[in-house]
Length: 303
Image 1 (cartoon, helix red, strand yellow):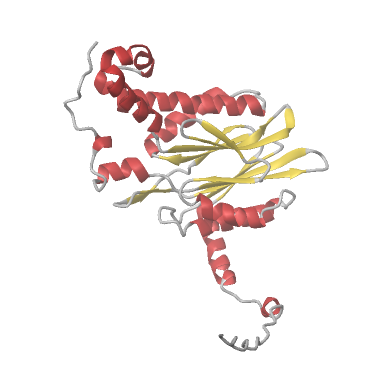
Image 2 (cartoon, helix red, strand yellow):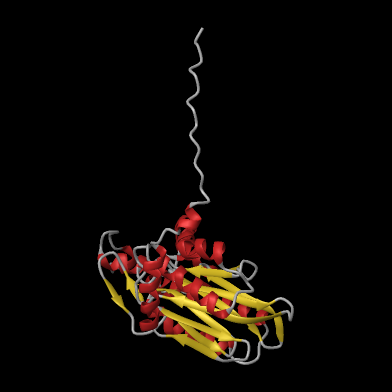
């Protein structure tokens, strides 16, 4: 089989200033934040909390989505998604099918990783290899013969560098292994990053801002009410990132299998009170700072 040059202009080859290319590169990568609470005496997790915005954003345009980027995929697991909205339902449906039933934390994370890797392979087949009439399997077996070493290496590098612009955040625990909670990020090309020890994790363009706040303020042993305050505060602070929207979804899954949510209208009431309070400068705190006058040092004579 000889190498086939595609006669088409593909959207991923568009100019970097083109709106289509911008959408493929940036849209949807906003913010999802999760935190874990547990009871260290009973050695069991108590709650996983999650917050997200509902904005699909690119530099040329943005829209508010009618659904959150967080989904309950079993009695004890939440999934968060950052990426293009076209991939959200296929991936979340595949995760529900893969993770459903009574699985340990290890099995759940491995199943989610496999879903990510298989979905990325589908996108590679469609966006990189389909113009040549190949799949990843046939490229591995027939690629060098079909293209020669130089072209094969160029396409191989394109496959390795392919980024589907998708991140997944899993939070929960296995029902039969209570002391094995997970906060797991799965990112390109299907790599696992575990955050349970840190107690908080985030994905999307607002992640760094949200995590900076949670690392400083979140505590494993907080009450559920205090943890809601901190995670919602982290989401509001992440709005400093250009692509994070103001609408908020705030959810938590509990040890007894119940699932709770806070409406966006309640989150907005919280915002108004929080905005007012965070601009206050407490006099008692300021009084702890006692600046002293430092006398200027005498000039040192030069030889």
